[in-house]
Length: 212
Image 1 (tube, rainbow, N blue to C red):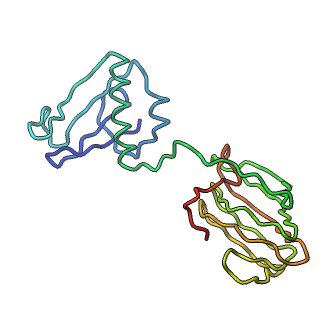
Image 2: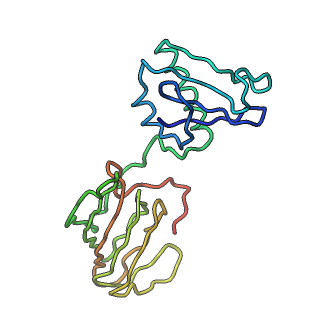
Image 3: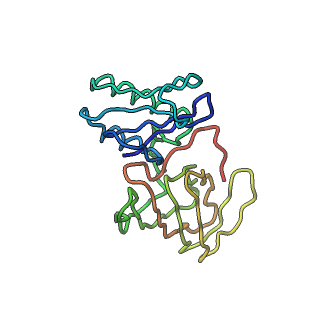
């Protein structure tokens, strides 16, 4: 069962072991897994690596609480400390943007990536002349290929040709888009997204976020 390590003032790491009694094994905590697998029959053990059962410096003594509600309270408090420490867990997601009338994304194939919470989405994006591609980002990687190029203009920049055959890569959660198709032909791109399931494919960035 995973453990949560907290340093005590004495300089030794204290380990929170979820499970029945036994030596704590150090591992990176998976918060959802900890809460899901927390068993009311288990005991929660706090111990210090300084070898003392009641360390006078760090106040982390060895104790057990058998009441399920008390154990759950302790667990949530400790996990909150991990979150504050920077576990990288996101509690909310951006909203899905709406494509403008002159932009259409056709999904050709959508499959799960085995053993992960990711999916692969193959599609074609077509942007008509005069249409601006909204600023957006993806919760995963995008690797695309320009099927039919045309002239495009990024904000505050001169128009430039996006050539047919151009490969495109947009990294995870990097904001891109904002360019306008200024040529007389549509822009047509074969898109391949490897993204997290259940999250917006075209996520709307915060207004203060800069464009790549």
